[in-house]
Length: 157
Length: 93
Image (cartoon, rainbow over all chains, first blue to last red; front, side, top):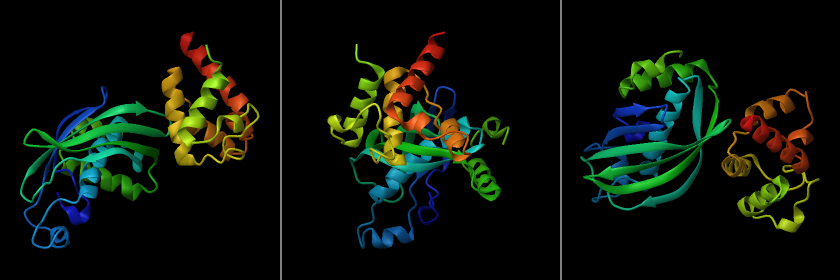
């Protein structure tokens, strides 16, 4: 994770776009400017960034399903629950599955686990739209390679 | 069994917190009921789920934006209900 750059996922571990499932890991950094403020002397992962990590996990799944022809933007967060604190230096297991693949929108449900215990969960609605710029599309493909998205799902991109 | 319109009206009432009695077959989801695009996603999800279909919202929106059809055709509830019926029939065929 590079929190200050909103890079929440480090590696995609399993991806099955057809059945609508993804697993990934997120390495919470030992240090980040975010921890300087959240909180002074007591660094913990901000809950909103845990929700963002869930949203990005589902987002990668949706981008893979669309073979990077469309972009997924966060539209709604439902049923968000932050069940535990996450300190720097831990590895979070992220999972998401597709709840509904609509026309121009999608809904995914996801969670973050720490040592087998769920620390955050949420249901995310995305707007699915054409990439606003080719530059963004290229950047997302590059980022997908950084998180080891299987190359086959970048094809057609 | 509830009519398509009754089901749609119930979904809109519950999802958008609009009194059921304000929702008529002639109501325009956006212009009359004031449903915004985000709330309409919730409505679309509930309709897709209730009827086992995938409403082609992107295509409808494109046709309206291109000026090919009036938004009434897709967003007046009696017309929306008829479109849902067509999608259900097409799926069953």
